[in-house]
Length: 438
Length: 97
Ligand SMILES: Cc1cc2nc3c(=O)[nH]c(=O)nc-3n(C[C@H](O)[C@H](O)[C@H](O)COP(=O)(O)OP(=O)(O)OC[C@H]3O[C@@H](n4cnc5c(N)ncnc54)[C@H](O)[C@@H]3O)c2cc1C
Ligand code: SF4
Ligand code: SF4
Image (cartoon, rainbow over all chains, first blue to last red; front, side, top):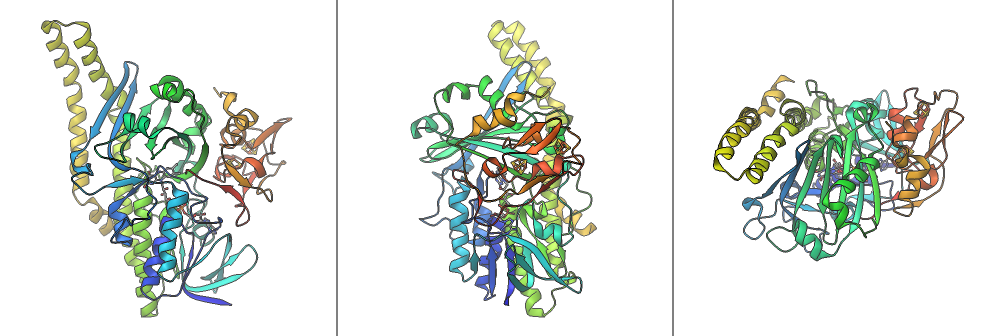
């Protein structure tokens, strides 16, 4: 019989963060990974954010951290019947020449392995190639986990960091499998390209930097968006959509990638390039307006990261909340263990953190998504600007331009007004408000 | 209107060789009695793992094409599909992910 203070299922961003923090505080920790090594089963964009990484590793990044490119900006591409509008933003504050990097692109198979090694160096025990198939209960309370081979591991606290299809969350009764309106499916292709080509089309201010591309358009991503994340010597092209939207008349996601390559310059850039990798993975995508937070702790057990659905439902980013959530869960578990009380009640500070951090992301995501797709409609946003450009080029006489500018741009004002209102609401610590309701 | 160019066998042809799998056992199952032939799994599976035979879905290419997303079980209207993770150390291996 093997007994630990803390048993963690999953060696992704959340699990390894929790394992490192707990092991550093002297806890006896074991964490499990079903792949041959951490990251082998995982996928993402993937932009990892510095502020979250430094919560776990204060002097992040190290010299041997496997990073791809620093993110210095982004382009929004909005497709409408008038054409394709590109809003290009290279943000001074993100320039890595003068400032600290905000985010990096990474390959998860390399990065997650490195990330888990930090937990192992702190003293946590990592067991790979092992699928946890069930939890063990005694008198209705979770006391450990069981591997598919029947081996048992017991702990005071169990942390479920086992991703979107989390067995810990489902078997412990937190939730059922995600419903079609709670999860999105993504597919992604990796295309090798020469560094110079990537610098030319996606390069930022400094060496090894980039901008990300986000494409919104009915023909390429009817209910979501399509994105391009540049690496050192490859780009990844991906798209995703909620399962419910897919069922409501959508196509296999590969169809949209194909459409995109047919109708944009990417098709020409990649004309003679064969993709070298194909990936697909789900992301929780809680589209329902977050009025009632998911329960994330019960007696002896906490769930974090994708297992707890902590992904922003607009941009699909979940790395930061997985990592910070892993840390919070570990800290609260340590306190509970040292107080000798690992009941649901003792974990309430974790639920409170979740209700404020995760729910405010969901709330923001829902609002901005609703604004872009429904209220403003990105077509309505793109049309006036595209029409303005067309007028300028078609009628080079000032008498035509001024009324056209007035007419087209005035259509934008109410939309910008609602956007600013959204910004204000988000700045206000909405989180605290929600937190106090629970 | 479903474009069958990106479904099943045709999708498998397009993505063949673009990932690695350590095959061991089948880990997605269909209860054929429950299947109503709606084609959801067949159309949306990102691995092209299903084949329709006489109006019934068959999980014909799990060992060599399954991406382990778990979507099929969630979109089956009759709960005919059981999705399990493959044994530890087997299944899909991702690089450049
Ligand atoms: C295509 C795509 C693009 C994305 N892009 C971004 C992005 O740019 N930025 C961002 O912030 N987020 C992004 N996300 C979301 C982000 O990847 C996730 O939110 C994040 O990985 C969640 O981390 P996690 O540790 O909770 O879960 P995971 O990363 O899924 O890790 C769970 C781990 O547990 C293991 N595991 C699962 N079950 C078991 C079991 N029973 N036994 C043993 N081990 C098990 C898995 O193998 C895995 O290693 C993206 C997601 C996808 C799919
Ligand atoms: S888990 Fe995903 S890839 Fe595998 S059969 Fe189901 S839908 Fe297809
Ligand atoms: S989704 Fe379910 S009911 Fe529909 S074809 Fe597949 S197995 Fe049959």
